[in-house]
Length: 317
Image (cartoon, rainbow, N blue to C red):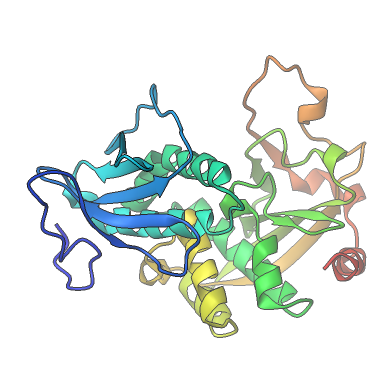
């Protein structure tokens, strides 16, 4: 169990029956509570008038329980192993933040259940840490994020970083979507993680941005580039940014300070009908999951100048 006075469950002594709870956020439109009951671990409780069903959901490390206090329904999300309490706190805060943008209780329940299903993946990323490929990928996304801050307000730009929220591509603008990849010097193959990433059927303009990163003592780490972005944000935007970092497994940024890179080159590709990719709109519905590697050194004919990308972004912010 985490030994912190500010730990949400630190002052909650379990009652003999039922839950002892405190409201998570008085300004939230939804009734989330930090809660405890006898013989159980830390719990996040949602009180709602919306009836819902959670049977058949098997989640490692979490227990879901439906109850009622006579006037409302209760969904209790309880951590089974208190060894994961610190990570569970991060997860709960991210969950509450995600639900704060919902317009009604039905949407809250839907969002909450979707986030719960991602718990095991989230926990796995925290335990194992980010791989080198994931650290380089995040460095590229943050590099692009910092650049586009000059086009719009921080709040608006952060809302366009859609990858951490489950978007098909990393960035979503009104007139364009951008998938960002990073490779090391001398490498030319990038991993495409789904059949949706390079399928232009559902967006006006789709770009693939590839950064080539070089190891450098005078470069930046993920920690340093994230810190430079935090310096440009207000308190509310900083919470949104941290939530997105949490979603990609970068909960403890201090652990992402050992690599140092500079961008030694970059290319922008416009995804057109003739661009070689596996597209959801063109493959059999019987194929449910696709991953593949793309050799960018063979795609020179699809390179476009950054002037086109910049023009599209300025027109779509």
